[in-house]
Length: 312
Length: 312
Image (cartoon, rainbow over all chains, first blue to last red):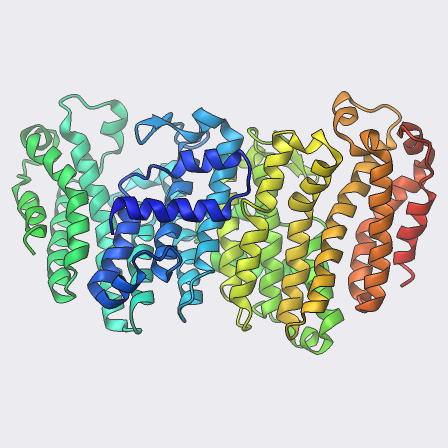
């Protein structure tokens, strides 16, 4: 599925679900053009990997179960970004190379647009026709609610996240992995018959993927020679270097294993696309990054494991 | 259903759906003790009126379909109040006789608690076992999303609400009536077989109820001899007195009609409980209120129509 097609579906859904009012402009600004569209791409790649026939039948249908799920996870992601950027949260001003929604349209518009997108994410799920639709909504609300993604935001903002390596991993799991898990597991649930063994593997695979992506993102942030005090305080690689290294290499090995076992070649392609930019930063700045680490370790094993992705 | 029992269910659901973390205190503060619990009371009264046997079977079961729906609408109501009170929205400091959640716990906790309750409202609906559960979620998300309740908040905050009588009524319909409609129509949908004719009547009845309650609330706010500039600017009774009067009396007549036709005696009791306080204010200050109105009209017809409620 091309980015343009994913964005077309997002546009179709907004068009249908928003009132005829100037507020449409705010929702479009906040969601389009999409970012990397990682989560909707995962929805489609898992479908292609697990049920290629249904994938072909679902293309060009913005109201197929997977098109609804793909837009739902992307709109849900957008709501978290809009709320995260607000002054009372991370107080950011720029997002995806332009002013944040609250900078452009004011805070109350941003807050209500976030609330609106959150509702829309459930509204799209409620239109899914597959027999497991209610199960998907139950999983979605658990994974992204107060015990899930939102608890990750709480651990981050309360700074509990940085008090131990365990808390860092838990925060990455909740704040980043849960939505990725929803994209992958809900897509699989709507693609084929229930298969507990496969779903258990996908659960771990998608959880480690979210955590791994965040840790590599943290690592790539050490590419500057000079780090800010905040970066030095919160970057887990500066405080738990060996644990981060072990977690990262173990997860990357697990991906390679499960990818071949479950034949996730399309999904691997999507993930590698996403990892490529991180890999480039790490390759270009390997020495600088390694010098920041408290223990003298080499990043080469991580680099080779990421490269393995593209060869599966 | 007693207020204590409704609150017990809210407590049970929070207990189950929140992580073991100090954040529980914020959710409990924001939702308990409940306010008038009007919306969950409506869920139960409609069940009692339309399917008394199922009502008796559902008592004492916090996971019956109607207990889940009652908590869902109340938590959804709470999220809108928490977000409405934030500095970037209405900037209120007091709610239900205590500090607003953001005053007590800070803005990011309030924002995330609102987001969490919004997710919880869908999580509870996803546990409903009745065959119409997906239909209920579709209706809920439409009624309370960007075309529904949230659009009412937009019309209010953008001040489009006060530009015409039509816009005032539209805002009351979206911001106040939609959640009341969800309580009434979803309860009926889960209580008995589909009946289009009855649901059409309940649709209009619940819509007019929300609008009517807001207009009577606006009227009761004219009980002070001196009005603030803001009150004089926005109160619809000061700008569209005859239209407000006609809308109010027509709606009250329609309630009486539909109440007897559909035998909504329990629901009438709940509504009268809620109207009683407004009626007292209007009775105690009838002359003061009448003097504020641009046209010389008497409030007596409105007062008698409200009194009729208690006699059905």
